Structure formats: C-alpha cells, structure tokens
Image (cartoon, rainbow, N blue to C red; front, side, top):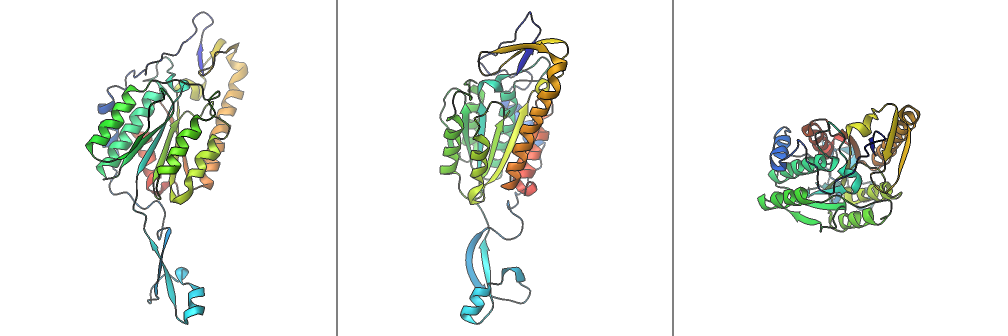
Amino acid sequence: MSASGPESPLTLEQTLDWGELAPLRISARAAADGVYAGSHRSQRRGAGVEFGGHRAYVPGDDLRFIDRHALMRHGRLMVRQFETETDRTLRLVVDASASMAFRSKGAPGAKLAYAAVVAAALARIAISNGDPVALDWIGGDARQPLPALGGREAFERVVAALETVRPGGDLRLDGAATERAFAGVARHARRGSVVVLLSDLLDLPEHTLDRFAALSSLGRTLIAVRVLDPLEATFALEGPVRLFASEGNFHVETDASLVKQGYLARLGAIASAWQQRLAESGGTLIDSVTSQPPVNTVREIVLGAGGGGR
C-alpha cells in the first residue's frame, strides 16, 4: 500500500531506499552487538529428536524413554536414546518484491532496507557462533541464492547481496516466486536448520503459508518476520486519499475513515492465520515495524531460534 493526497501520487523507486539505516555493515553490527547470542540451545526441549538406538536401563533414567517392545523381546529394560541436533544452519529468505520498497514519509527506511539490516545482523550472530548462513530471495532482480557458508567471507557475501538487491516483481502475477525460494530451502536445509522469512506478507500467492509451514519437517525451526511500514501498521490517514497498489498498476480514491477499520481487520487476519499455522508446526510469527529499533526484532528472532517459539 502507498498513499498520498489527490494531487501528488507516490511512486516507488527501483533502487533500495536506505534512508537513515545505511550503511548496512554499521547498522547490522549495532543490531547484532545489542543481542546477547551466547551458545544457542537445542531447538527442542528435552532429548534430541533423532532416534539413536537402545541401551540398558540405569536407575535414575527417565521412565518415559523405556521401550516396552524391547522389554518383551529381550526380557530386560531398555531405554531409547536420541541424538542431539547439531546442524544449526541459518537460512534467510528475504522478500524483495515491489511492495517491500515502500517507505512512507518519516519512516527510517524502506521495508526491504529494514529487512536487510535484520538479515545481516542475524548472519553476523550466526557466523560468530560458528554456524553457516544461506540467503534465498522472493522476487527482486532474479539474483542467485547464496549457498550455506561460514566465516568472514560468508558475512561479506551476504552483506554485498543485501546492499545491491533491486526490489521488484509482482507476486500476484508470479505465483511460482515463493515456490522457487522454498524449494531451494527444502532441498538444502538439513535437519535442525533455522529458516527465517522476512516479508511484509502482503500480496503473496495463496499457497505461500502452507508451503512455508511445510518446511518444518526434519526438525527445522521456522520464523516468519512480518515487516511493515508505520503507515501500513496504523493507517494513520484522514480525509480523502488516493491509495496506490505497491504491486500492480491500479489505485483507488476513497475516504480514509471509511476503509480504515476494514483494512486493519484484514491486516490482523493475515497475522492470525500465519501465527496459528506456524504454531501448529512449532514455528513463530514476529511482527515488526520499520520505526522500531532493528535490535528489538533481532532479539526476538534469536529467542525464537533458541527455542522460544517451541
């Protein structure tokens, strides 16, 4: 969504509007340093999730893991063992479609710029913990995804890609855009990976939520971060307005007071659907607004990736 008075329509630039958020490295470093990452915990509470064989029961073992079938076969108490997940690859999926280029008057930067800061900060935290990072795109200028890499070189590659992406594409007309991104994640994200989607969740193909939730198989942790502009989040408009679609060439002229309630209700319904569906898969939805400090969003993601969403 974009809005203006009747006499001066707002147009989206095709270059990334950093506003007050640039330069990316400094912003990402500040956000990352504001989060105490520490050693990440297992993404599931209690024992690991992959079966690792049996051993003889020892007094004091958790009775929940006694295998009754093994008792009947062998005539002695056996305990099921589980291997702890160790692969903690961070896979970032960034929505770079045209709607992510929106920046209202007074906002620190475009939604995509804010998402880039959060993504770069997460990459810095993951790499400092010895975890590889991969980057996938939805929309944008058809650049190639970055495979999972670790070390300083990986951070520089992620930052370079985020700094130079050109937002664009109408996801309503390209229903396969999310399929392409999620298919890559499904192929390469191993058991225990953390998958973070950064998007405004607007104008996405109908199947996007189900496809993203399906990535929770193999013990992957899913976190969707909805990034909204302050104007989108509050619809703080009054009187006659001309509303332009961020994706597509159409607009409507209306009175803000007549559409505000319905707009906010629809925005809330989108969040509820994502929150409920992800919760069923052990995932988390995090709401963010570009006017809030990126460190707050990064901190919520780190907590969710460490088990806060489980």
